[in-house]
Image (cartoon, rainbow, N blue to C red; front, side, top):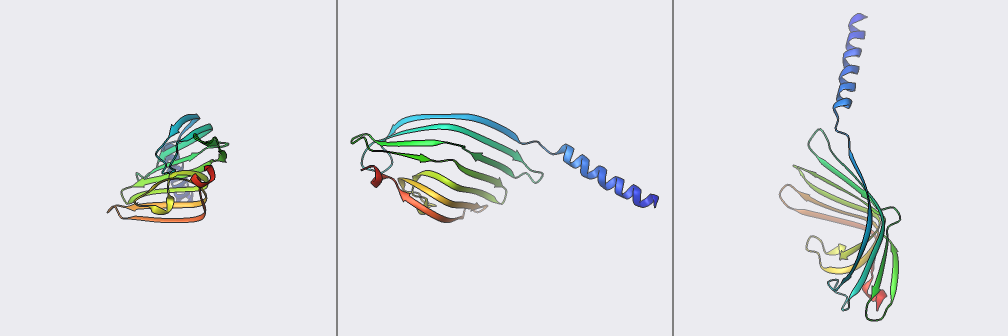
Length: 163
């Protein structure tokens, strides 16, 4: 009986000490206030981009040395305006996204509603553009540099909506 209690106490101490030694995540809250005129979206016209909202980033490195980064943008709004004709659209681009990096490779997963300044269907050689996506996008690059991309959901080209 004493051996069982000692064994359980040892296991419990090991588990508690492991948790106590775990690195706490870094949590960063930040404001986003972006305002620029861009001509590099392949729209054929300049686009005034205004993004405002809040963001949160959570980062940590696990015991195996894998880096984990999570970002979300609650209530982030993007207003896109065609400079030549004044036509505008307002988008919710709250994300979120998760990035994982280890010796085995790099993973980028974006879910929810997001905007893209490249066509997400053209990875690993992205073509500039302006798109809105609802769904899931996954990019994985293995240790040898081989990229695998999957995307589900809806992709909307935004340049035609601004003409």
